[in-house]
Image (cartoon, rainbow, N blue to C red; front, side, top):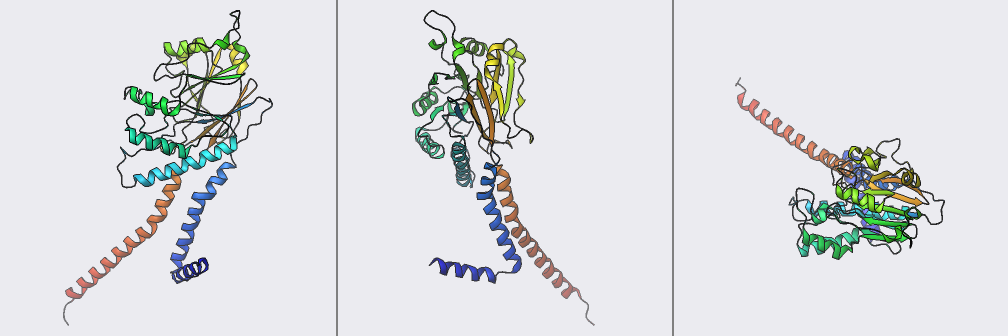
Length: 375
């Protein structure tokens, strides 16, 4: 049956005009490149992080996936847009997990585009879709924290208490996660202004400070050091972070500053140019602890729908007291979609030009026939 179908297809193809044959071949090659080859080639660019210590912890950071909803986008192509966005996120997430082999996966908020306003029925549907795109890992600890699109509270939209409770119910949000004897991750929520007040592991039975015996990571959707408040100072003073991971800005940036000069903090691009795009950056966390210098890394969005050209996943490894970090950049899907629009517009444009040409030709011939003088 397959042979008969191939034979019929081949006959139909050979009957086409040579120009159409070339067009079909080019279209097929474009689809093959955009939907298969470009993803495979992109993976070859990703850097590997090699650990020296036995207790090395590999972390995959997922920022602002914002899976699309169905309430606000009423365009006729909304269903297709949702499908393409979901497929893109799912494919690259699977490849990123395979590449990193993570011990911890951290979702840094804005999991859904309409998480704050969605009805219970829609939220259940979005939650199921989210689980299909980002399936749970059999061995890695998975951490979810909320963003302003999940619970509100970004200034334009007030904090939604119902959405806040719902997020915690579905995603098991917690104030902290003890990863091992050497590492604890704290949920520093700048939207709700909630955090762990203290950590008993930071002092021994005599009350002496032993915080230098393990590492502490802050995770927050909104950057912690940007526009510092009393909440920021309290979190830093009480829990003494070695590194902060945040999101919200959709770009890859970082800041290093002494905790006494937070009001002058400035974020700089990280792996945002061709020279350093796939570089593995190393940070000595013990040095930052000794000098009381704070380090915050902003992870770029992993969704091509966020109106930024550079998208990807954060990949970090805690190797002893060294933080190694790189970005797993993904392809610019909008460019691929534009290429489809261009190639599909070619026959349409030629067809319109041909129709105009026929119309003008017939119109002009009729006029010349009726306006000719008799001999």
